Image 1 (tube, one colour):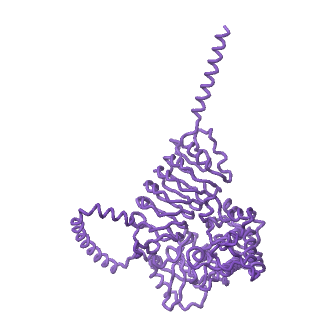
Image 2 (cartoon, helix red, strand yellow):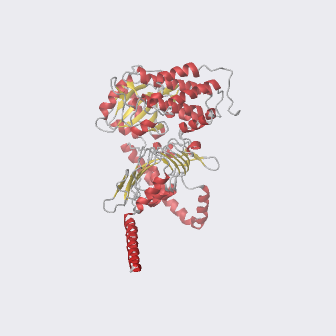
Length: 595
């Protein structure tokens, strides 16, 4: 009897255990959920956004940043922007077979872009800009035939642009700007649809899109974005038996080209069409010019006539606010023309109000806004042209390095221009996009703050806070990235990053410290803990003095404090630079090779 009872008890226990295991299997997370949990495990730090991603959930469809198809419960969207996510991007995201939208921009991801994303063939949008991603652009992205938007700008990607991306016939927007890409921009496929703004900020790139000639093995200039010469040689050997047929086809093709050229020339003369002359169409439908200063020897008619001649060959820069052209007048005067596409119906009234204020602002360390042109499709802003280019080019793209005195003077000029915007303008102005490419230089390397007119103006008596998110990753204050709330102190932080860039000669997202998961501020903090902060100085900079170096580092450290209240005002920054940085002991020079 006792044995029979024990057998019965064991049967019940086994049944309960089996039921428990079965229940857990039923409740187990879906395969898409497992892939996202792998993604979460790879994250080393965040603002807590992933805290409620629970393994015990049957599916991830209610998790923060995740959207699913209502019927299949398969993940279709992963959107986690501006959440301070740090770590590599897990290759298990490639298991999300029905993923359509991947938005991980403006975080701190590092490592490579997983090639496994090429398995997500339903992807329509990939947004990874504003991180610390390095390595090559995976050629497997060329498998995403449904992809419409690809933005991987403002990272530290290197190598060539994969020609396979040219096969993506549905690709509407493509942005790889501000990386470390090299080589020719491919010409095949959809690449011909994208302009210079998609590629700027990659000093190693060349091609027709950016008007930079590549060089072949002999050093001769060429715009070719075709396969390498070695591959071409292989192709020639394979086709050697078809030379006679090719020659015949070539003759026919030449006749066809000649006929097309004749017809094209006829149409050009008749209708005056030219796709590269984008501004001509902007001003042809009726435009008016408003000039802020009466000292220009040019009439509106003269300027509009010149505007109609501008083409892509005149582009000298591009950014988040628009494209910049070089406008040369017949009398030798040169201006910079920024083209800004209109955003909405209320854009006109808002922008004209801003421009009226900016037209009244003149300061030695601000770029002079001469006027603007109203056109049917865009705003055209007319600035003084500065022959020295911008600070980003001077620091990172020119063979001739800036010496220490030039770097100090540029830092001083930028500080004074920003202090004027913060303290002396009425209404006061928050720039919101302080970076090296927005510090222009005249022929004597004197600094001018530019693009300040495109920031939100603050009326006296307001809270001095704007929630319109702007700026460039790497320069943004941590509280601004978290909340989107900009104050004068967020500009101070960006200025501090700018100073560190001037001292080090490295961009805020330089690959040398991004591999360690650091930005330029994190790198500085690491050096401080090691008592090696002087090692941040650019070894190629001549004439560095220890006293001014230490004083400028002290200013930068105060500016990049994590607590905005501990940062100085720009007036105080100017005082510190004038009194402690610009008057160092002349005999105390710093030797970067001595440590």
